[in-house]
Length: 261
Image (cartoon, rainbow, N blue to C red; front, side):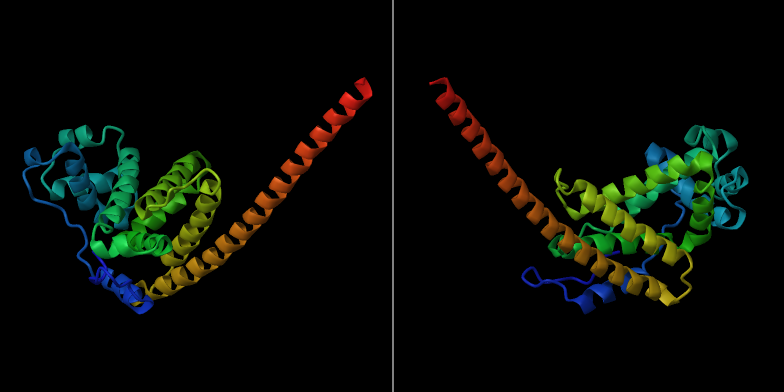
């Protein structure tokens, strides 16, 4: 699931980026594997069961019954399911969030992605995460409602924080101390607003979500520029104050020396 190939010396145009994002919506969705479990790592076995269960979670919700149906589909017995997810559906939810982030990051491995600017990478990652989850939108909607409950809210917040961190890390942003909080806050706002829009988007290839994301990224960029200019002004004010305080201290020292004489 990658963008159109780009020449090493040429950055993708806006039309090429939009076309590639739309093309990613037609990419093949993950399917349950029939590989012998003994040849898979433990995490790959968890992924296999999760993907098999997701269609049932779409219909039934985040219930143990859905996990059981998924296990039967790939020939796993109850003992194997318990070994993979000892905490039941709660463990499946935690693994689902991790799986979605890993799937998102896996779309960012080609040369075209490496040539993008940071904000283009951010938009690309958000878009691909949502497209990857589109076949399971009912399951995602159910999980979102579940996380609105007070006893599940911390799990939802941790999931959002982890996703935002993964996006920034994959986009190659350094997240320096001075900008870390601002960038996280801005990206969280962009991601959540786009996510909520996507949940109710019934357009072909999620085209309306793509357009919404592009608008939100432009707004965030303007906000970032304003914050950057404000930070520059504050730094200058801080420098002026530092010089003033240093001169004031020097003046006091000189006065005290004069009085002592």
